[in-house]
Length: 179
Image (tube, rainbow, N blue to C red):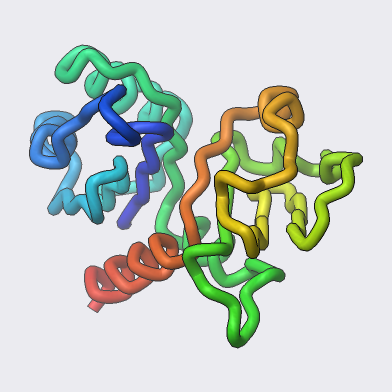
C-alpha cells in the first residue's frame, strides 16, 4: 500500500535543508518500499505492507531529525486518503491556475471538523475548511494570502500545504505506481 509523507517547510530558502536522496535513504532504512521523492520540497511516496498510523509518522519524523538535523512537521497519508482529499478540492475549477490553489493536509484525520474559516475580509481569496484539509484559492499568490498566521497557528492539528500543481503531480505518481 502506497503512502505520501509531506514534510512541512523543508528546502524553503536556506533553512531546514533536507536532501531528497537522504529522505529516500531514510525511508529504505525504515523498511519502506520503493521510496520516491517529488520536487525538492519534502514530498515522499513509498510503499508499506499495511496502512501506517501516527506511530509510523512519528518514527519517520524522528529518523529525519536524527539523520538530517531538521525537525519538520510531517503529515503521513495513505494513498487513498491523499487521492480522496485531492479529488474533493471544491475550489478546483476550469481556468484556475493550479499553482494558485492550495491544499493544507491535516496531520490528524477529522481534526478540522467544525473549524470555521478565518473571520476576516478575504478579498478575492477563497477558503474552505473540511475535516481533513483546508482548501484555498489564492488569485494574488500565496504570499498575498489574507488568512492571518494566527488562524493557522490556532488550528487543532498541524497542517502542511501544497499547491495544486504539486498535488496533481503526486496524484500522477501514485497512479503510475498503482499500475
